[in-house]
Length: 433
Image 1 (cartoon, rainbow, N blue to C red):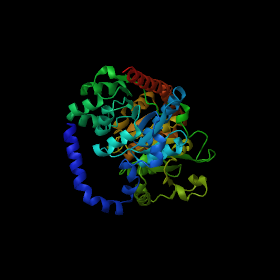
Image 2 (image 1 turned 180 degrees about the vertical axis):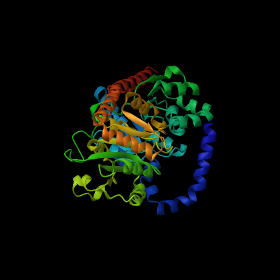
Image 3 (image 1 turned 90 degrees about the horizontal axis):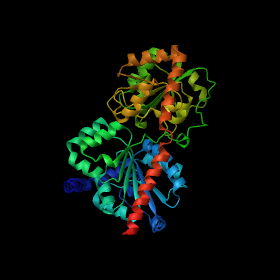
Image 4 (image 1 turned 135 degrees about the horizontal axis):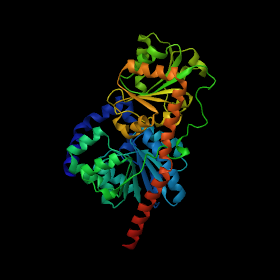
């Protein structure tokens, strides 16, 4: 199956090769980090890496990097002899790690393309003693290349969404053989363990440890910084990570319930949705301002809505809010993590398509800290009105949501301890041989 995977991938690369120069000339996004995508490491960095004992951490994007930070922090406490290299799939994730880990990591870059002639030389250059992958980042050549070099791999915060599970089951033999190459699989819930068992993965490789993202106070770097003063005498509704087509539901639902009583701060998941958000607000005759144009942060008193058109500030906006709407789940995108909002004691409203965060979202609903609704402006308006009219109940929901996060405390330390045990066991067995 690996042969077929590489044959198709390499053929695709050859077919696209003549078009790549044009794509790089006219595609700004494609040009960003292209050297890293091709596995190129500068000579100075190579000299710095050579001869070091490396542990390699990989996370997809910003959300996964936030789950990784407390694990790295705890790992450094119990093993300071290893040097850290971090890769991410997304540019935003890489930039986040460079910002936070620049003094602690030896090298931070984008994960090279999963082409065997690119990823295998990259693995050889960094020569890691161990690799740790956040969630289910199943890159076949990456996994196969590490396994071929007898590098132990650990998966942390392991999860398989309903959508992914369907794909994996269709190619059950291929994906189960990849997952079996991990030394340890730390899954987020028993449900995820069951899904791997259905794929044929051995139970003895799996343990259940909850998500590490909010397991220590260090994960919440929003503490102490408030985007909008708390003395603003107006309710603030924070709509975070709103995806394509969800703008109408959020804006219309807000207009039906709290227009004139509160300010809506809407944060599109992708900045290219800012213009579409403007159009919906204009169609609804609502006044708005861009976050980057706000001169006085008390603008929540004067505008119906503020569009958050920056990256990395949503966590501070949640700290200023009263109620949260989580995007990605009104349409079938899989949802986004509600934990940041819950951490700041906000009652949460989200859609029913939270399949990428089904365990987390269901935990908050069962705890009484969140509402789950259809893609309906009317239902959203009803829930917002309830929260506004019932401040005690709203505060209680926020409290219950935050209490639900307490279940995650300490998981980073446990995860780091297990990673270290796998690492030491592997190094010990190699020394014996």
